[in-house]
Amino acid sequence: MRVALFITCFNDLLYPEVGRATVRLLRRLGVDVAFPQEQTCCGQMHFNTGYRDACVPLVERFTTAFAGFDAVVTPSASCAAMVRGHHAIVAAEAGDAGLERSVGEVAPRVHELTEFLVDVLGVEDVGAEFRERVAYHPTCHSLRLLRVGDRPQRLLRAVRGLELVDLAGAEECCGFGGTFAVKNADTSAAMGGDKIAAVRASGASVLTSADTSCLLHLGGLISREAIPVRTLHLVEILAGGGAPA
Image (cartoon, rainbow, N blue to C red; front, top):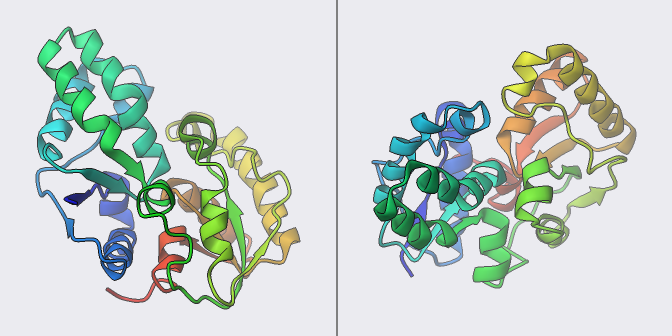
């Protein structure tokens, strides 16, 4: 199986350790991972803010960069949802039949990491050990667009030493929402505050999620309130708790 890592621009710029952890985990599970250097943004920010024309070259580049791979794995539910759910819309609105065909070939092969581990590799116990109390925040895209269900929790429960604690209101939005956090800062901060209160009440020492965008937002609030909780992407736990690549 030829597998490619789609790192996403958010991780590439702000959380490169998430990409390294993804590669480390997949290689440990016997997957040979390639990294197409031509990859750039999936176009989610442009699409969500109405700049659909600007998405077209990004979708074209994505389909070219990841053509020929049996699977494309990404540690981002948000970007996986953009590719699988909206690239076809961009291609159709552009009236480009060739691009529609390319999207139809590539997009279905894109998997969010937990989907790939559980559904493609058939693995729940990845051989990880992580001895802390962990709260899991299910992101809006993972819940409502990808519908990953309990795959992340099943992976976390199989980690030796990890105590997965309940998070009140877990399915509620954290308030990030991409540009929503910029355009509606007060509302975003209030929503994040509710989520942080739930994290504090859970007694967790680590907050994890399948999207670093939400963790950036929540981590900032945690830092400001000096709460003794650290944030880690789920793959950092599965790969060994964020150890260097």
